[in-house]
Length: 504
RNA sequence: GCGGCGCUAGCUCAACUGGCAGAGCAACGGACUCUUAAUCCGUAGGUUCGGGGUUCAAGUCCCUGGCGCCGCACCA
Image (cartoon, rainbow, N blue to C red):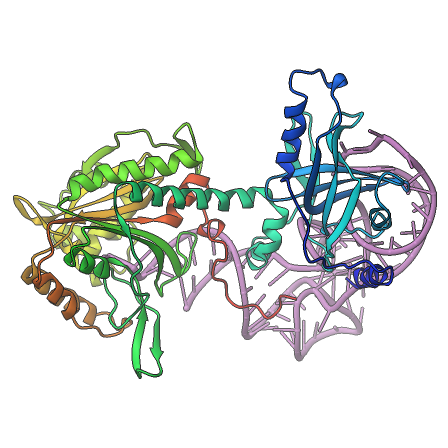
């Protein structure tokens, strides 16, 4: 770095501004290449004509200096392109810059596109400007393109911790990382588009909430000074969105962050992105169709063929998805018949999957432990598991014809829960009772902030929630699946890490 | 929270049973006007994650703290 400060001084002494104010960039690097190919379409390579003129900008990715001339690659968001800078061809400022450039510097180049003797499409620099001087060397690896045209990186920037802590460097240096986040943006936009098209209203509900609910998780707690009151960061959007349906907003959705103060591992980040949507006059059956449609649309944005490689398996998203009831799934993959199993059997089954604390768990937790351990890992292709035990689903309507079940389903794919949906409970009295049961269960957990039932939510239900279907989709999990990443941190730009004073 | 593994130059990694801390790339100086992991000659670069201990001698062994990764637990 000391050396680059010296270079910086040198640049200033020569009267060149190392931090430019603007540059009239007209073409992306891929775009510039395509313009050349377009112009010479139909010609053999040796008959191609020079041109067109382009104006490009990017980071210096490699330099091959020959004294009087220089080859370099620039890199931008789209890709990379070679430039050729030659004395007496480039303008005087560009000529001076030839010996002052470092890897990572931002430069702007104007000139015609041509093809070198070795066949690479290249921009001949007539003008070259320094746009921003890099003081800290980027952790570039060395790249080569092998005989198959594959990009091979030697000693790249691969340390996970450094990559997450310095995501800017990660993104600047590793194109495949950039691709993941561009895919993420495409998918989220597509989900919005699909819902907008179906006349859902996108809304924003509070993140700071006086009461937390809609899921069971430990919340982050904060406080508001002026109001002198305790607030929670939301753990789910659910209860506010359903309030909106009470308010005649009959189709709503929100894509936003939820916050859960639980452990961190490869599939959990304390803040994560959820899509929640609610549709009046629909039940969970219609939500099943919608779930298939939304996920299929998302898959289309990333994999045209509808197949995804994930953790060594091929996940096939083609529709329709298999549908199996929760009880049948437990019977089939865990050998457990809930209709006949008593508490004793459940404890035993839970212990068999490694829950040593099985004695202390209530029935729903026992069942869920077995389901997570024995059933979910078996489900590679997306599968709709429907009709959950009502104890596991405090916000879902009871199933028609069977009070012990709820009209709820999850979509499991690649072994992970992807979608959770149900026919929303709209009976205020039933809701009140289930809140009471939930509060009772929560009292047993000392680690949770004490919380009474959400009276205002029940009040809203008393005004009348129409029959409503609701659906939640974990956007981060979806992106893991679609991009084949087994760590959630690879699909979150700035995952939460413990603060590190040592980062210099 | 528990267990295992890891942390050495800007990056990627070496360093045997404790015995002079090294390489490639990057950087710096020089040569080279069609190269592409450019090449050639030369130079510099270190709190071996922090603190303590054992030893004639510690990157290496011991204790302690930090951070990360993996697994487990928690996350109905």
